[in-house]
Amino acid sequence: MRTDHATEDLLRELAPQVLGVLVRRHGQFEECEDAVQEAVLAAAVHWPDEGVPASPRGWLITAASRRLIDQIRSDNARRAREATTADQSPELRGDHADDVPATDDTLVLLFLCCHPALTPASQTALTLRAVGGLTTAEIARAFLVPEATMAGRISRAKQSIKAAGSQFTMPAPDELPERLSVVLHALYLIFNEGYIASSGSDLQRADVAREAIRLTRMVRRQLPDDGEVAGLLALMLLTDSRRAARATPGGDLIPLAEQDRTRWDRELIAEGTALISAALASSQLGPYQLQAAIAATHAEAGAAEDTDWRQVHLLYKILERIAPNPVVTLNRAVALAEISGPRAGLELLDTLDGDARMGGHHRLHAVRAHLLEAAGDRPAARENYKLAARGTASLAEQRYLESRAARLGTAEPP
Image (cartoon, rainbow, N blue to C red):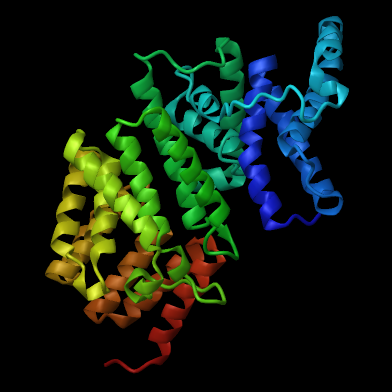
């Protein structure tokens, strides 16, 4: 099966819209998602050879609806009712472009996936699967759990939504803040998977990152005064602005300090900086705003040596206080090392060794290797680079980390 990137991007954008249409009309979230996935697979097979239809959204709705009705008809207890539905449903008569709703239900679908009957982890996982288009394996890596565990979690989440008898509508105003926090976290994870692919030969997946930005823009249009929505969008834009400078033509990783900053997207930086400046001035401080402020500080530096590391460290300390997380501490260790030397950063890293979420994670080994190298401990740095390389499923990261280890093993000390 061959699918060009334009078709992949189109299918990724349309899939949650089609799922929203089916769930609104038929309910049965789990069955609808299965039908949409089958329709997307059929499109990926047929469209490259036959061409994209005039109404791709209508084509997918038709194909998914047919599969859904076929699936329901196989249940004898529902045969009579679904036969009536089939006779009345315009999609099944082959009218691809007619009667296809113009409304994009993706935002409603986002909130449905964040139903209060689910645990926060299940809410995020289901959102990544149904709206973000990530595979179960990719979601499992994002959560640092086995794929089988994640598959079971997603399946139970679908069943819980079905059992709760939820309606396909936006949540009530009093439910919105709690549901919104889970939506934003899911979008954050989707973007991260696009910015640093958790597996495979490519360093980044631009289509996934773009989809996360598109969905976040959609949420912001609905909630223009929410500071954390603006902060998350600003963070994505500022981070994505570096995409063109992050890899060599051969796909090898280029670390932040070595990137050609003239290749950073100045339009994205300007938009992201304006967003976070306005949010910080008018909203209660939140984690996404702080991360966006850190990204803006990096964007303001014309060269790596011009970075205001004291400001970066201060922002990480505030972030660590209001949203404790081992990854925040990991990043603060890098900033602290820039201010107080690599040994200070290494001492802070030592506090993470007992954290079950981070202990043994490849990023902990990678940062430790970087700081050990800066401190002059080449053998220990080399060993940690090798440990980090073995711990990541990203081939681009593996190549980079292995090259750092190899360089330390062959070059003479300064």
